[in-house]
Image 1: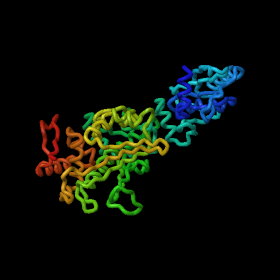
Image 2: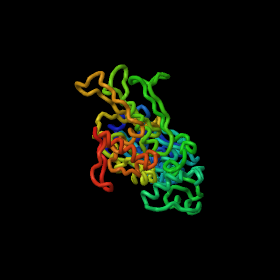
Image 3: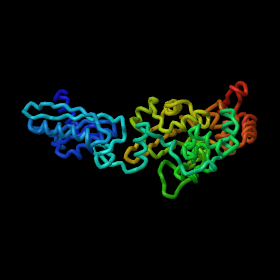
Length: 425
């Protein structure tokens, strides 16, 4: 490593991948720094550099001592042991810097001697204190995924009618007649744990009232006047609960019905924004720049496998953000790693020459709004899949779709099997 490159890096200061130490004498403290780098994206420790960026360097008598300390810390004070790389770099004045490179770990999470898990936060490090962060570290090492975590819900909490319809429509398979047969089938489908309880995927997809089992899995929606959040002044609010397909359909219906409301005397074309806030930041190595070009990371593989079977309008791993930006480029993303939040903000603008007081059409019944939104997003949905998504029976879906066709809102293109819907805008 060239000294000019090192000095240039020192001039930039400390960050999440570069740390300065003027000297190292405590092996446990050094091990904690290594753990933090290994549990994050890896990094470089420059020993012989002060916090203010000055580089007094190390004497020759320090080199052997510190290199031995590094070796002991990496092999004996970190679990699992780390393979690190060091390089001694001459400063030209008889002093030396030690450049310690810690790779991104492949056996996460790593612990120090006392069993503490450390993560990098900017130029500092911090302990892992939440179960959510710990789960993320295990997910990154493919040791488990959140959707396979067992719950306290027995098989009796299964919505047997919904699950029966899914088996019939997707697998052309009948519902098992015995409790033992049903349990075995759910385990084979990765929807139940070995102890016979529904796992998180089973609860979110097929349980009756999932919110009673996992109260945090709900959506809270609110519409404020204007673009500012108010303490008590709002136009519309609703909480949504149920399975993932129902949450999606209800939340989308809330957005669509509020796009048709007037705001401060203005019509449907009034500018504003929609914010979608999700607990949890982007996982692993993902950044906003990476998801914009289609990079993705499977956080819940069981849920992904079932969503891809038509339970939600899913078009392929990594394509959602790109498709959204293609349809509406004015979307902003914020990945708040400290606050553990991810936010997508969709900015709305009034079209040029649009009338300020444009008339507002009367709203269709909420089910018909849901149906229009669903087939607009996924034109090939069948009556059976629409029934699953809206949690209505097939005859209700057929009746409402017939009304939409009679109103000239949708048409069917192609045969009953293999064709698709087209929404008439």
